[in-house]
Image (cartoon, rainbow, N blue to C red; front, side, top):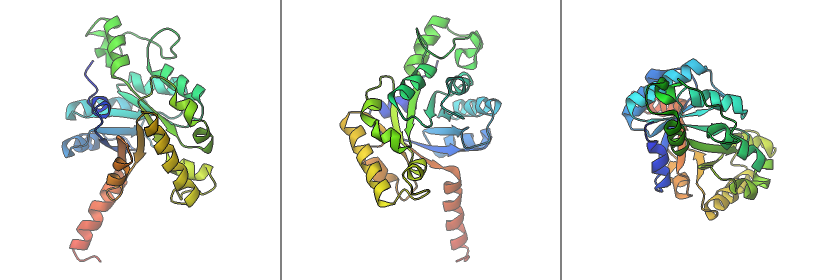
Length: 254
């Protein structure tokens, strides 16, 4: 199994910069790799990618030399296992509110006694069963897979210390949109109570010696990285929108 260069980058303290893609397109994934991104988030929770699409987009990541991370449809073990078996090298698990949720997320990614992830011969991450011995694959998969849990509800922030104590998690991602909704300010993460909650959560993650993650734009990415985030991504429509606006302005469209 190939090394997870994104996970290595984060572990070394450097930011890994990615882009979220919400629709099936291996071609877009390939372009993002050539553009210099470290990783791609294949979003199955809010996007239209099927499991077959995840597999093709993961292949495009491999071809372009970037890391495929998938956000499963739900935090159910079956949804997590499905994207991992298609070749994702990690997951961004939505709606993790308790330490129990976090432990279940880890168990759905890792192999071993008590794990919720089934071990099957002939899957794509195992080179279709044509590569290394299965025990060696399981060991390598556990070492290279990345687990990111999304803290995106007031309940999660209330349980943050317990969640931070769960072993096997690489990234604790603050989801501003759902958090704003949970706190009574739908779509407004800059509302004072939400912004303070985000700042406090990031500080507690860093103080615990763990790695925070956040979304960002070209305007906010430096600030997000300065707050300790090493798992950072933007959204494809934002990239297109920024480039389109600059082109149209230069062409006299206001």
